[in-house]
Structure formats: structure tokens, C-alpha cells
Image (cartoon, rainbow, N blue to C red; front, side, top):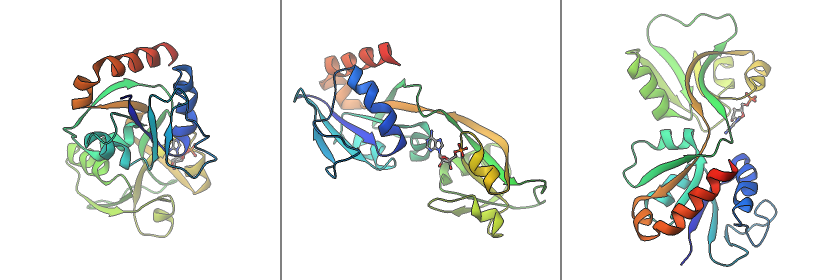
Length: 207
Ligand code: AMP
């Protein structure tokens, strides 16, 4: 039995497929074209699952997938997982988790209203700072929350800063650096040790 590898749909998928190809792991169809969500590797030994980012840790933690490739943002948001190890920084998908608010508008005194889809990261960050916040959970497009008066600040991923600028926002505090990571199910690390080690050492050569 080969490895079952869970991949994060979207930007990360695009960037990690060439890395996997360099390790001779290629899906038998183009996942960006196909509507299939489970692929066999060309060599037939591994399986690739393409899933939403938030589900990659779930699949890996439960052992449905042996390994997963997803962003540090997703891993941090998922919390203190007991079921997987983070083994490698793939050096792709680099960006920053930051707070942001309307340009030139100081943060109000008292309880800050913060909108984010990263509620755990947001809660932990402000808790560490002993700052009281009212968390507003959104699923995306956080940038519009301050514009519409729903929140004073947002917590979001920033790369070039163009999205913030286009919406009249400015980055404020840096929470952490983000990049794409390889995670491995705890049991799989034992039962499929050679295959996992092989993948890790091949990936190390190409990242
Ligand atoms: P930018 O306008 O370049 O600062 O990009 C910011 C937006 O792109 C954010 O709202 C994110 O949703 C998305 N984004 C940028 N880089 C990444 C990444 N590495 N992983 C996930 N989302 C990203």
C-alpha cells in the first residue's frame, strides 16, 4: 500500500504539484481540469485526494490520508492537533497573517470588534496580548467588514497587500509568517515509515 496524500485545493495545489512531480508523484489526470477528487498516481502506488484546505488536517488526523499538504494558517486554525506531525516547510505559499484596519483610522478604545475567518488564530493572538475583542466570524471577503461598519479590524492573510489597499485598508500588526507545510498522520509515520521518509527526503531535495 502506497501513501494517501491529501492536497489543498486552489493556490497550494497549483504550487505543490510540480514539487510532487519532481518526486515522481503525479496524478493520473490533471486535478485542476478534472472534476474527480481522488486520483491514482501515474506509477499506481499512491493516491491523491484533493480537498478544501480546512479538511486536510481532518483527513490526516483521522488517518484517512497518511500525509497532507496545507498552509500553516490552516494548521494553526485547526488547533493543537494530536493526530499529526508537521514534518516539513515546503517554502511555497509564503504570506503573512496580519491585522488590518481602515487607513488612518485609529483603533477604538475598549472592546475591539475583529472580523476574520481565522477565529482561533485571532482569539489566541489577542489573548496573548491580554486585549479584549469581540470576534466576528466570516467565511471570506473580510476586507469589506470595516468598510461596512461591521468590524474595527480584520485578521487576514496578506501577500502583496494589494487586496488591503484596494479596499482602503492598511496592515497593522504582524501575527505570524505562513507557508505551506507537509503534515503526517502519527500512526502512518510508524506503519509507513520508509515511504514517508522517502517522500520527506525527496521533497527536501526539491524545496
Ligand atoms: P494580496 O492582495 O497579495 O495581499 O493577497 C491577499 C489575499 O490573497 C488574501 O485575502 C488571501 O485570501 C489570499 N492569499 C494570498 N496569499 C495566500 C496564500 N499563500 N495562501 C492562501 N491565501 C493567500
